Every structure is written in C-alpha cells, then in structure tokens.
Image 1 (cartoon, helix red, strand yellow):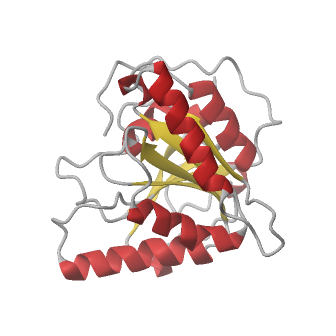
Image 2 (image 1 turned 60 degrees about the vertical axis):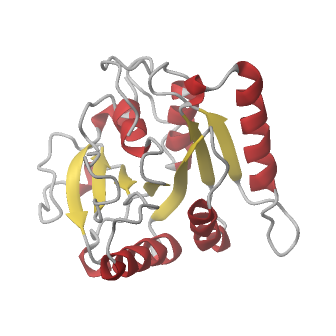
Length: 238
C-alpha cells in the first residue's frame, strides 16, 4: 500500500490568510480544468472521491488540503491532536482555463493561485497535469513561470495517454521534456523539472508518479506496506 493511500481531507481555503499552520511538505496538483487532475489525485490515493470534480468545470475555486499520515487523527486545521503524525500534504489547486468564471472571481482565483505557488514556503513541489493530446497552454506556462523562480521541482503528468498510439505518446513525452528543459537558472543549469505519461483509465504510469511524488515530499525512503496497486473502478478523467 502506498503512503498516498493514507490521504484524508484536512481543510479547504479560499484566502491565503486561512492556509493551515502545518509545516510539513506540500505537493500541489495544478492543471487546466478537465485535464484529469481530480482523477489523478483520486487514483494515486486509491480513493474514488477524495478530490471532487465539479459538474461545471472551472467552478471550484478553493484550495483543498489532504493530509498524508496521522489518518486516525481528526482531520481539520483546528485539531491540534498529534499533528506531528502528519507527514505531508497533497494540495488540490483550482482548475483553470474556463471562460464561464466571472471577471471578479477569475481575478481572485488567479491571485490566490499565483501567490500560493510563489510564496508558500511549505510548498515542496508542483505536479502539473497536462492533457497529453494537447501542448502546454498559456495558462500551463504561466503556472510554470510563477513557480520556476523558486527552484523547486515540477513533475508534469501527461494525462489520458491511453488516447494516443505509441508513436504519438512517445512524441508527446519527448516534446514535454524538451520544453521543460528549456527552463534554466541564472547559471544555465536546468531546473528540476520532469515529465511522464499517465493514464488513470489504463493504470499507465501509476508507480512512476507515486514514487516521484513521495520523493518530492521526502517520503520515498520510508517503507510502504505493500505494492502500489490501485483497486478503484474504471473512471472518466476529470
């Protein structure tokens, strides 16, 4: 069993002032609405509805936190019982890219996302969900450029890889890695950005994603209790 299977709802916030006071590493999931972000979180955590996909894409505008470890403890930001048992946080950021959101809400949303990924010291890494059938959008690039100056890792999950044939999937992965390698620091050294193919429906890339997330959270060397094998029903990626 993967440590990610311990994930439980912790809290939801709509303003930076309400972010939890925990100090454990946070791994944030970001991506365009309908790229498969909620499904990726759910299947990696072996839970059907841990992350909620709105029936109206783009409407969910809160940041949701899920604790890893200490699963027997009451999961709420005001619960002070044995917080040391929480080892990390999985953070579900609002999906972006839908025009239906009103102007005022969109401005708040963008400020919340931008400030969180640029300024949150507990944020250890970003998992960026990108539909493997489409190139990086302007909003994906904006997210990368907000986060890149921190020097922290980005792991790009190319979702819905089952929709591509082998040649197209290979090309999509190569192009994504080439794009990510174009980001370098002041000394010309590439940032720690990685990419992989992924399909929740066909269980492609689950072990690779699991290990990379645990590594970025500093949990990879801690023992799991079994194999990373997801036992949920087939589902459409949201």
